[in-house]
Length: 441
Image (cartoon, one colour):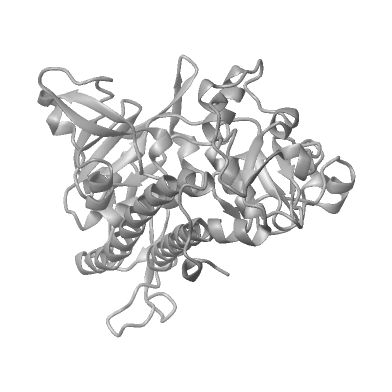
């Protein structure tokens, strides 16, 4: 099927040419080595991209690799730098990314190979302007998938030379590079905070009175029977529940406003990682006590999968609240905690994440009607150690600054994405041009 929006005749700017994708580019698709054959993946060194990774405009790395034997026993192939990848299946169907490394892909991706006479970047951004059309094609198919045959029929309008094409998309590329830089900074900040928690509260090398690492400098450790581990001398044990002042229920609310309702953003399990652009809902004003505050902890209490435990956790900050409309609740499948002291929040969040990342939450799951539910009360009854007041306040001071930087970068990225998306159709349809001084040359 074709959407009416796409069928409208587009005006080709003077000097530009209209082509179909098949007229200028060769296409291919990858494959998945047999997943039951461990040798196809063990010690893999060949980058292997799946369609879920095509949410980013550029792909510089991947967490997925296959082995040489896996490569040789499948029909996937290695694509060169500047190949344009388009997701054909799943939630990212219609999304395009520019490959900035040599890599192979699974079968859910159409690879559009570079042509020396055309700009791959221009092609990628051209496909971005056709996203709604591609989603329409996907939704109208029997399997909700795109195909190479459909993509080859795409009509593109392009400036006549590769240099002109590159010049036109230079500002879009600059915006995307800044967005990617901010994301990389945030990933590094997050890694630093996790490392600091590990260094201080797993290895117990927090600064002693002389500023030296406690345990490595001979700090005395004692065995605690309730926690079943060694902890620093004079530290006491408490239950995890001792950090929490009160629990708040989730609230999915209504789709549309009604008398006496409040407009809110609603954090679902799917939003816990990014905490950005959450769905808008309307809750009754009598449930205003469920609104999230700076320092609240949100956990996912229902859902998960065989390989993903329930109990994923998020830290709510003023930045998270502000970028999601100024008022937040969590959904019915989540629960939130308000800490007894604001200074506890960062410590409790990374404590929880450390336990989650180590697979502990699988031990606190029950099932109701086939749905996994996190046994919150049972988990919070476990004993843990109470961190001295000054140390937990120091951890809060350091980590809160990092979270502030992360929030500022996300807000900047939201603004950059808005600017890019407004510029995209104007540039790609020739309605505006780029000054040569602003281009990459």
